[in-house]
Amino acid sequence: MFKQVKMWQVQCDRCGRGCIDDYMGIVAWTDKDSAEQVALDSEWRKIDGKLYCPDCYEIDDDTDEYRPKPPIR
Image 1 (cartoon, one colour):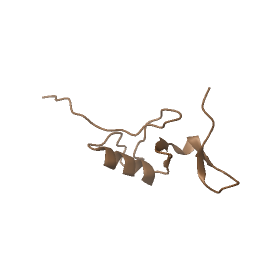
Image 2 (image 1 turned 30 degrees about the vertical axis):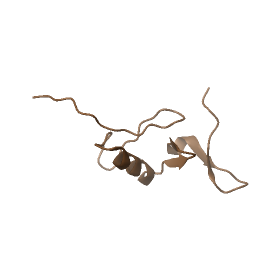
Image 3 (image 1 turned 60 degrees about the vertical axis):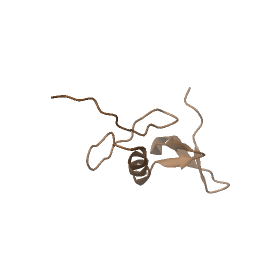
């Protein structure tokens, strides 16, 4: 039998890439909090309420804080 279920995946607010648990290969979780925690444990950053993959943020040299890279065109 097949049944459709609701799952959660974190996607980068800059590039749209989905977070994948590199160790287990999991791409979706049963709740938002678990999905977010896996992303943050995988070097994703939450900046101003948005989530960014490791390719889409950088460190501001002046403030030593993380900031999103410029938007993709």
